Structures are given as C-alpha cells and as structure tokens.
Image (cartoon, rainbow, N blue to C red; front, side, top):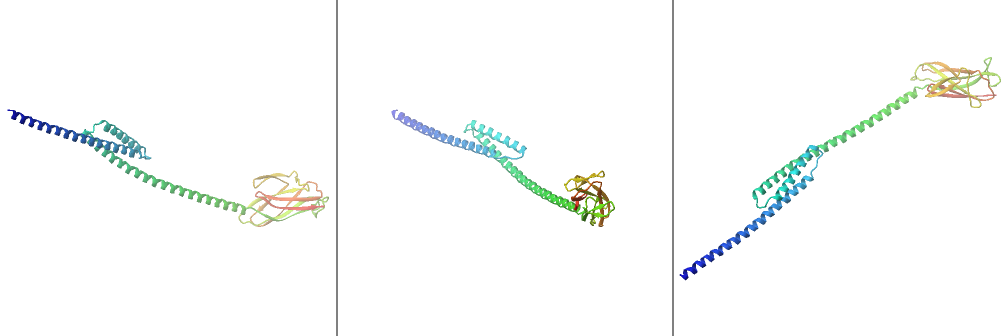
Length: 285
C-alpha cells in the first residue's frame, strides 16, 4: 500500500513539474511575442510619423491640391492617434493600420506625381512667359528705334524743307532813291538778298520779316511794325514783305524807313516763319 502511494506521489510530482515547466515556457514565449508586437507597433508608429513629415515637405502653387494635402495630413494625424491607443496584441487592428498606411503612401506618390507635373508645367509656362517678355521687349525696342528713325527722318525732312537765304546786303537810300552811307541824307534802309532754291519746300506766298537794330542795339520800329512767329518764338518785326516762292531761287528787297538815322552801325536780321535766314549790317557816317 505504501509502495503504491509513493508511486502515485512521484507520478503526480512529475506531472506537476511538467505543468510548471510548460507554464514557464508559455509565459516566456508570450512575453517574447508581446515584446515583438510592441516593437512592430513602434515601427508602424515611426513609419506613420515619417510619412507625416514627407507630407509636410510637399507644397504646390495649386490651391485645390494644397487643400487635399491638408486633408491627407489630418488623416495621418488621426491614424497616429489610433495606433497609440491600440494595444500591440490587437493584431487585427494593427494589420488594418498597416494597410491604411500603405494606402496613404500610395496617395502621396500620386500627389508627388501631380506636383511634379504642375512644376514642370509652371516651369514651361514661366519659360514661355520669359520668352514672351523678351520678345515684347525686342519688339518695343525695335518700335522705339523705328520711331526714333522715323522722327529723325521727319525732322531732317522738316529741316530740309526750310527756306534759306544768301547774299544779304543792306544799303542806305536817299529821298531821290540814290544809295548813300551818310546818315543825314538817307530816308530809309534797303535790305536785298535771295531765297535759295529748295525743291521740297512748301510753295506759295511766304513772308520775309526784317528786324533792324540801331547803333545802340535797340530794335527800330514804325507804325507798320507787327508781331510774327519764327520757329515758335514771338518776335516784333520792323518791316515785312510777301514773296511768291515756287521752289526756285528768288531775289527780293525790303525797305524800312519812317525814322531818323544817326551815325553808327545798323544791323538787319532776316527771318521767315521757319526762323532766321541771315544778317547784314551797314555803317552810316
């Protein structure tokens, strides 16, 4: 009887030892598995945070695309929060989060492609705009050069169309019509000269204006005086004569009198509406 009891006790002790060993092995194995699951959860968390950083690095000039990027960033933030609240042993949830992370990565790649396409398009548009600005600048410069050339040609033509004079001589005339240089004898001054040939000058009546200055430099006038415009300048004339100018050289004379003359040098300035065409002087004794 005692022998049988000892045998039972030995058997039970062996079974208990085996059970304890099995429990220890199960506990050790479960602890290792939980550690691995926690590491896997941590790795998933880090990958999600890294994806969030990659999304932060994305930017676009397109407002709609930027709005979608913001929405995806919010989804990642929510995913990080859900991962942190889920136990590592909940394999079903962890696998769902891994799939969601993969989907977010795929969406990000599509956004990267869209942004690259937009950047390429914007670069092409900027290049086109730059070329258009350069072309506009060249066209503007060419226009300015053409305008300057045209204005210069017009100015040259205008200058070329102005009537010029030559051979101006001023003499003193007595009451009897004879030439004299004695101030006490003359009654008027005669200015003679020529309008030279100019084929492109306007043809028709032209006024020749005479301005006579006495020895003191003061302009001499009489009741026949008036005002004329010479190249935009308002001047007073001493005498005026109308000439029929037809482009060929024409000789003319203008007389000025009605004043008393004294000794000294008298100066004559001859004008048309284009400006001065000559000067002459006379010394009266």
